[in-house]
Length: 267
Image 1 (cartoon, one colour):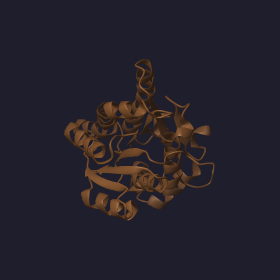
Image 2 (cartoon, one colour):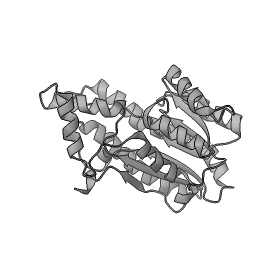
Image 3 (cartoon, one colour):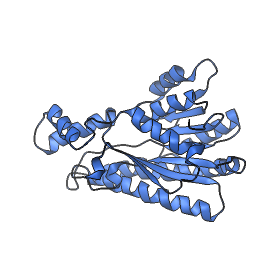
Image 4 (cartoon, helix red, strand yellow):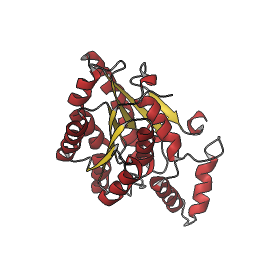
């Protein structure tokens, strides 16, 4: 079993999808979880659903592009539970436009969430993670949500691929910097294939549009055909990988990328 009992986590973009499922599994594993998201009502519903009678999960408004929001969410977790052991930089967005179609505003919005959000979360959580890491056998940990699009090229959304490639190398660089400084903070990334979430559905719509058809079901079948395992991923598939990377069982892993993609990148 992954050793997580008694740890404290902050998960961005945790109102739904992979983030919500990660929060649910963490609470089941004995973690106290701060759920951060811009979707306030959805976030509160998720928190009520998984928090249980002992309020093992609490919600905090978090726009990952806002330094003030990050400071508030981290401060609330520390004030409530006394520290922070785990940061999951999960919040992200998908654009679904090609290089020629995307505007500069589109790029700024995409990079603000997918890149700036990861930078701010990491930067502002370091003091709390460093403090808890001093007394933890395997240190504290950061898990960054990258993508298979951060490992191989994307015909449909090269700008999304650009941001996730940045997350991939930022993960490795942050791991090396913290090791050089003697911080007991491990930093790893996870790389999902196509997952059945709201964002996954957006990719099907984008694929259908880019190939000149409105047939979303056909686009879904094309995506399915790229996964040798024979199915698309689920939020639970990815959440279990996140829990492993966040746990003491991954204590000898830092600067690594865990690929959970049904064989997509093996081809």
